[in-house]
Image 1 (cartoon, rainbow, N blue to C red):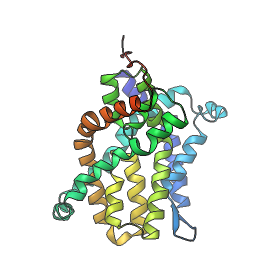
Image 2: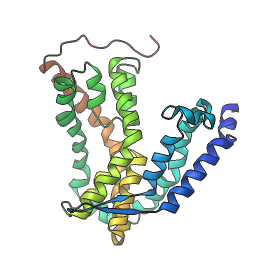
Image 3: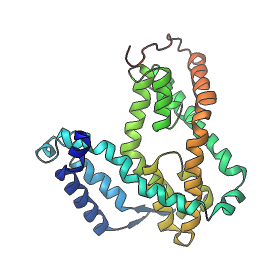
Length: 275
């Protein structure tokens, strides 16, 4: 209780968030044409950059304002801050249920796209970067919260696999929103994919990445806002519902098998949390 009270009353953290929000909103949306399309720079991106500038782990001089106490307090607040956004999706999914059902198998089968991390990233991690069993934790999924739970349960977060999944999770948290916003606005303006397909691709099981992706799409195609939010929200829910089973029964066993086939015959990691 005392820890929760300290977080709520941490005025430096709240003042920093308000200042970053106001500055980001004042800058507004900036469209950068690049020939084949345009990239939308959203307030979320500016907030990300400003947040890095006051992070003492990135800019040591920022420790005069933000200490490790504020950094530790900010972590649990991320989940709380994203809850209203997720609730908004819930109110949109219901009225748009017919449209979601009309999407048919595409909305369910898009979960198979998460296996792309194995096809694209895993060979690079093992053969090019010469990673050990960290590559299994890093590449069997997109490394969000449910995937961390799977690795923690099977190997422990103190294992090599745990180091891999946590490394990708941190990188995804830091840069995922930026990359998603750029890709969504670029692909939408190019017209290479349907807006509906891009909206479904936004829901990978990460609230912040989904927010950045849908925000970019909505600003590119504002007349389809409800459709974008409904499909992205439904996709995100399905990712949580089906993604864990896909990772447990398909992705992780396949990654383990490929690790052995690529010539890496290390002993299975046996370090479990608490051992």
